[in-house]
Image (cartoon, rainbow, N blue to C red; front, side, top):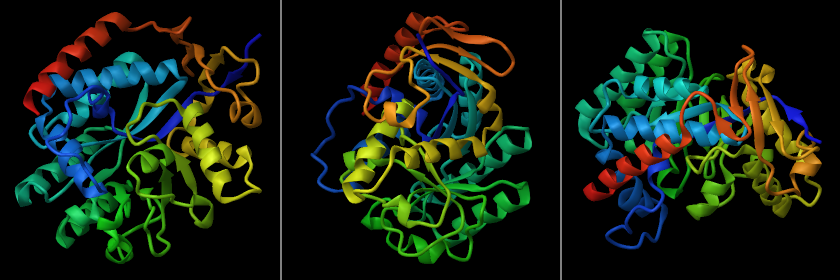
Length: 340
């Protein structure tokens, strides 16, 4: 006996992180959030090239599909390969059968020219018909004029801004700096240290926040619509929902799994067609928030898109060869590690 649900939505991801598993230890042990960025993620993203971007996206999309996730909101950065990077990700995921909403994370970490090129990549992708938002890394790595340029570009293109907001104590000023810019269509990620309400949707990533030791975002205290993301730690949304529930329960004894299920449901605001995808699960109550909250090991067996095409059968992707994708991704991971 099995249950069916619509396709899951991962509302904040970093697909390039698929290659990070098993990477060499950083030069020194990070002791705070900024050092985690400097010693791990900012060393990794600057080393990414075209093939690494392609195969990390392909692997991330295949693994998402195996978890019943048919749509991903991705935030990308590859400072050494900016131009065309969003199309590489979109094409790789589309080949697997996973929908994407993409953004390039603009930052001044690599100077004004790097920020300009990041804005240009967002604009190119969106004007060519790509599905996405204008990406910004975070307020604390951007000058005011870069934040204003990103907000202006997003408004001109009729899309939101996808930005990390007050994820750690280094971004405490984010609320003040974004207050005059943010709009209802913005995608605000984390908001752990946000000191005021901003318009937009908040993407909650409890596992990542715990992993980075930055604290709990307390999403139920916000007036915003809340969605659930993974911040690059895979795309298993049922597993993320289980963790989100117990983290919420730790802070609110009256909390219900239905609250987290609502956060999951809110992800369809960007992907309404994913509601019409059909995921068949190995557990007969995968459609119940209360069952999922206490049942590990729930896995997708089959996934059929709204078009009627089956893109996962008996746990295996139908459009691509899983063994080949894993082998190619492993090759790129080794290339990446050699540069770190």
